Amino acid sequence: MDDLQTLLAQARSCTACAAHLPLGPRPILQLSAGSRILIASQAPGTKAHLSGVPFDDASGRRLREWLGVTPAQFYDSSNFAILPMGLCYPGRRTGGDAPPRPECAPLWRDRLLRQAKGIRLTLLIGSHAQVHVLGAGTMTDRVRDFRSFLPDHLPLPHPSWRSTGWMRRNPWFEDEVLPELRRRVAELLRPVTY
Image 1 (cartoon, rainbow, N blue to C red):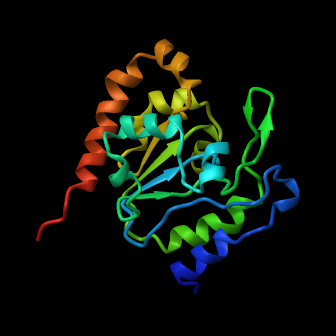
Image 2 (cartoon, helix red, strand yellow):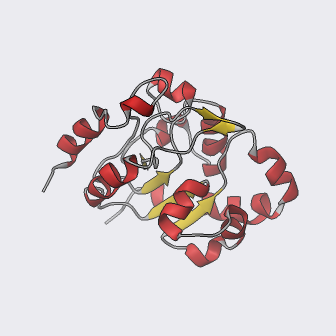
């Protein structure tokens, strides 16, 4: 069985998809054995690729706002694991980023998650993560029906600028989903007392 530090080092040096990545491989993830909340997203964007920091852009600021956490809390791997479906920036496609490389999740995801035994909530951000974990369905229907996936999973839209229009069309997201998301996150980040 692999230990987590060995697996993280191997994942961060992975070049399996190099021939398909326009900016080259730069796997970006955050994980510890004690991570309490898993952020399962699509793949890093160009700004994250350049900095090497997950969610190092406007979508990350919006996500932290949704969660009700500070950057220090967000980038503390004992709080949050960040394990996208694709660890590297996949390039562009008409209308946005390309989907995550299909090789990535089967190569790394299960092996890494077996080592993260502290995860109590998985945030499924965007359609790619939701399909991978929950199977077929629409993002809007899953997010609207978020209560049926609790306490283990909570589906969310991607926090990119594109979600602004979606949020206007679906005001229940801010009224119902975000308060529950913040409540669950605050509960899970509360220090454990004995």
